[in-house]
Length: 283
Image 1 (spheres, one colour):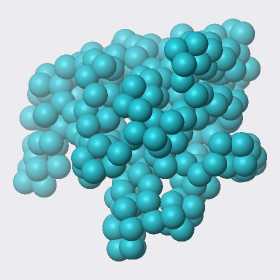
Image 2 (cartoon, rainbow, N blue to C red):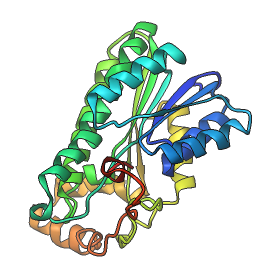
Image 3 (cartoon, one colour):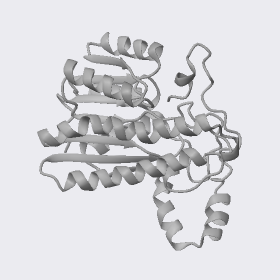
Image 4 (spheres, one colour):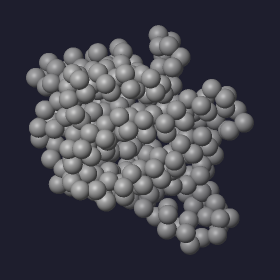
């Protein structure tokens, strides 16, 4: 079991949404320190103050995880000011709900930088010390979108497929090493956080409540579970894709369960005029 009590926990994109909830719940579980990385300075300050007033040890850092230089700067600062990280939640992410031909090059690049390169670079900054100390747990928030294609989210889907494959490979590497090293990959369907505002929930896959999915993630961390798939129907996707011809899968699962139409009315989190452009793209 991975003990959260007395551990230092870092959450990227931790100033709101499920990132904030994960941080709060780790503190309730007895984490000694919570390190929050987020690009939204206003939300970051508010969340840090809220948790600090409850008596918790919180360390906020404004970080743009799409920028390698900013990641390495923040990692160096975090390690020097707080110390080694025991549990890392790679949570920051972004989605652009458009047909591929409607994406700008900037949107494509930003999505990959945040959802893929950011996740890998952040982990790389801290995994070395975990290996050295022979203990650590990395939790990568992927998506059910990493298990099947979906219209109007091609770049997002591509990014989550990449995270899923990388995360599983990282797990295998760390399991071959000596020590208490773990990786948990989280593949949820749509969550009610505002990031997917306007989506129409597929049949058999209701919108997930943030409290419930974060409870599942915390439990998975404590019991060193390899993966979290939610809701239960997400477990069926790899099986059905494996046994069904592609056209039949498209018809029965994709269209029949309304998955392929789920992004038709996507709105997303409203843009905040007060934030710089790069902040509007960050989860």
